[in-house]
Length: 72
Image (tube, rainbow, N blue to C red; front, side, top):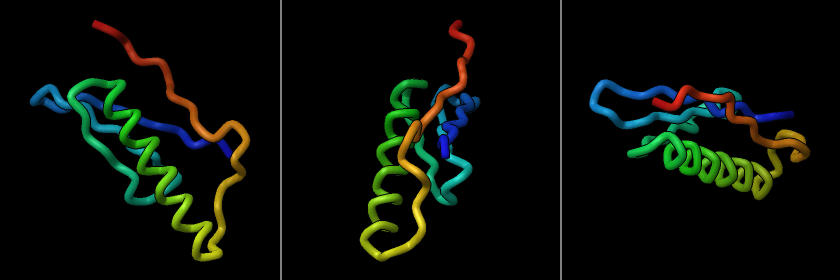
């Protein structure tokens, strides 16, 4: 499984990053890269929590992808 990180810039300039395959994994940042880093860190925490509780986790090979985004 490859966890996709989707990003969008809010009207106030902040960036939001989300991992749709993991409900609730959503993070804000002041830059695109910061929001992506926060979302990845949160996704790893969610996966770790699932591991600790014996729940299903995605295959760890090729865990993340971040689609290209236009730089202004």
